[in-house]
Length: 365
Image 1 (cartoon, rainbow, N blue to C red):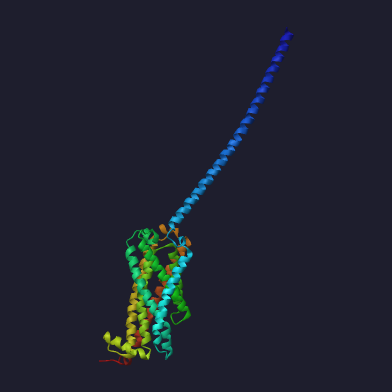
Image 2 (cartoon, rainbow, N blue to C red):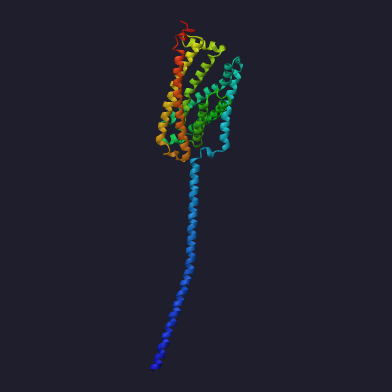
């Protein structure tokens, strides 16, 4: 019986071990099956998450592109490049047409001396310059009046304005300014130095680059107004050149006498021309200081606190930097011209007014 019980106990133990082994192997097979099921699920979730990130990224990029397109919908880059080229070309043709017409009407003047030849070559440029400066002065006054009390965003970015006609007007003024700079620059280089020295060449290059950079992005329209109003001094400069030229030509001296008589001067001939030139130069210097130093400096002071701190951030930082440097360079050039101008007036005063023998020449008492 004991032997039988012992055998039964061993059989029971073997049975339990077998059952345990079977359960262990069964649990391992279940674990492997669960791993096989979970692994594809994890991989599927990872791929889904990656695809979701890609979709979100693409949506974000499309949204950014849409925002950029909306911001620049009215800017230079939203329009065909050739349209802008045609605008500038049309402006150049417009100013050049005036030059050709002026040259045609002045062609009847004689060319008996070198001064008369120079007058005929350069007079058309001064005629066009007078028309251009008068028009831009009016445009600058209109822009300043419209934007001086406007919101800051409209003062730094043109296309923030909701007035479509005003936006079109500012663009027209910009095209007129840039196209004239191209046309006049070509004549300055062609007739160098009869129309101006190296300072005029740098002046045209500097203001063209500044004006074009602002025009591309519609930047700083209020500063455009202060820039164009600086042309208010140009008609007086051209008037001075006209008096200086006609007083040195024999056939135009009667014109000098006529002007001197009308303004009540007691001199005739060359002394009258000298005094007319001096007085016009004095008026020119005062107007120049007012518009190109005081007004232009005031525009810079208005610009600096808002520069790069608002809507103008859509303009690339390097373009903003170039514009700021060019604006200051233009202001410094104006200061240099003021110093040069004061020295010229002092020289004219000592030459034409401080000599007693000259004061009595051609005097009518």
